[in-house]
Length: 185
Image 1 (cartoon, one colour):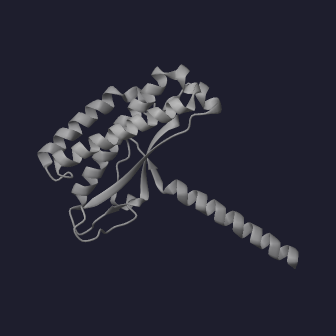
Image 2: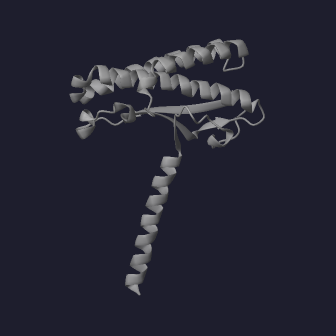
Image 3: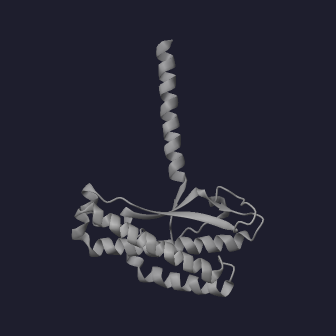
């Protein structure tokens, strides 16, 4: 009987660990040219009073070390991810406008992720020092943050449609110029 209890407890602990690992994977959505953000991607559906119509959290992550240093495809080592559990959208406001605005922010982040990947290729011999990669990450993360503020201001958080369209065109062109650094490549 005691053995059965231990086995059941062990199975439950393993199952819980697998579910948590699966949850953490589904909490992040990898940027893709073929997949746009959807309403269902935002786990929180409302905002507080006097809040903007939406907020999205993006994460630039990288895995460089050991055998990855010698990988021929560094594009898969730097990722641009949308974090569902930390992102929200207000259903009482214009949801389509908010989705368009956040998708453009996600696309803008991808521009800087591709620049980061390009810098890794351009400086491959220096990757031996992980501190060098950390500096690159900080450089491109900060550059993205500063430019996102400009985007937010110029488009009034995506509500100025003419400015929004201009930014979408500029970002699309930048992504096209850096297409060889797409993760799908």
